Image (cartoon, rainbow, N blue to C red; front, top):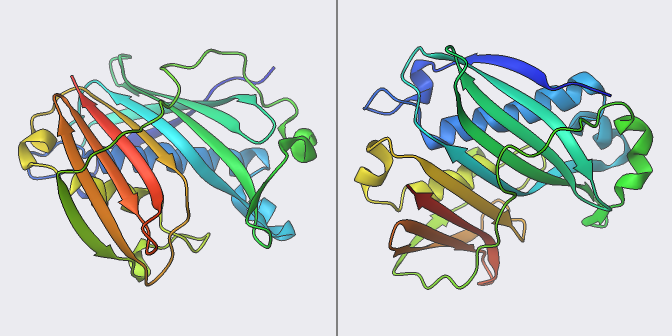
Length: 242
């Protein structure tokens, strides 16, 4: 049975805002980079799959952060693949500070997409790649929750440009998160409050599309939906401020 893998990080100057604490976007980026690095180390990364015209795509993710670490603060991310269903692979994460205190947790769910068919592939085709790498350790937080019934109070537009696109040639996860965060009142982002993010992806968005970001504030929860060029929901998310 495999063990959790641990990767060490530091909150560099590029990861903080003017409060000199890490941003939500930066920590989520580190989490997803760990997923890619660990998959590459174990032989089932996106570049391996691309040899057969396929790649990993993030389907949904939940992230809980108790605080935002300060600039230059070291921390580590533990990650492990917990389970594979027919088309979804679950990868978990724990963020730990230099005192051994866990201050963040995340659960991500991924599928393998066939580029030509643009459809998910059964993970049973890759059972051999995962053999020995499933870790029998429970999720550190609740799995991603469904985000529904959003009634936006504010709308903003965003044209998808070169810097928004990732190696799969669709909008990068971090760009969706950035679009959403940029609709919020600044005090939500600078009070260093504990929070939980749930994000779901429904449709791919591509270069040149004009996206519509809708935002609703409902008590202590910020709700978002992003519509594609055709007015179809491409992504929904919720941030619960605690």
